[in-house]
Length: 405
Image 1: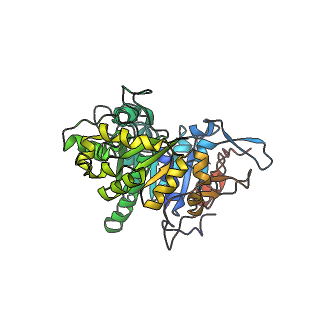
Image 2 (image 1 turned 180 degrees about the horizontal axis):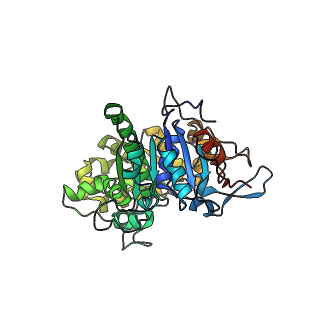
Image 3 (image 1 turned 90 degrees about the vertical axis):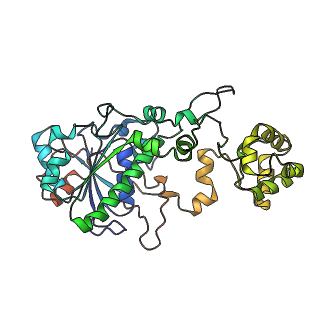
């Protein structure tokens, strides 16, 4: 079924031993771009996220199935095989598959893969071209390397929660995690980047290599300007709610019937904002004339901007801001997002027919390639759906652990 696949990564074969989110997110991205991805799952149980529900997908008649929405978020485009990794036969099967693949993804605890003969040292002897990506909470080395790592835990340890949430002296103040497992997602994306870099380098060297990805490393790296505010400016960032540490006004504001976001990025936009709000004197005030001055005097400026905003509805203000070229927008709920005409136009809501529900709809991939676009070749697989097919195609002994009912 994959022999005639096309796409930017057509021809690459990925053996995915990872589970939950970070690794599966990386392999789903590779699958969207044309790689063949073989997802290895535990017989009878499968990926942990298969059981993380409700909600579960309904079939075409509206009856509930056992396919969880969470699993479907990160596993489209893959083939599922069930292999007992604890058995010598299963280990031999996976070694034979790895010897024919380009890329292997795993998220065992440090040293865990070696117990099954599936570590990089062992598999690179069988396949020197293998690109082997390990994803852990804290990396293969260091004082925390032995610890298990989870997104929520690392959001706290990596500083992300210290800058997310309202200030302590405000209602609802205190640290907050991001509303999705962002550390896992970012680690999956960095894994994809590292894998593609290794694929490119292999064209010169002919050799694969080991990629060591850690959730904590990724979280620290993606603190971005907040990290350099400390490392360069010696300022320890604090929680500012929806405000920005380096730009003012760049936050949410209350209107007569809800909230909107105003994201002023330069002094010209600020002047236009003041005109629309009926506050031209603010644009002429030397305390607010430049962004640096506005940051220094945010406690004076923000309440003055807030006052007129409460006099009209959110949509009234957004219309005025749009006409004046002021960056602004609503705070959408998830249903608002996937019914937004821009999201629909950009193909970010896609139909991927499933054997149990031909109207299955999933979020799309945001990568837009002009000649080799993303293709959605198959829905998230049912547990063990492709076991016999894959093992036969790769010349590996047939398995009796196909898990389809």
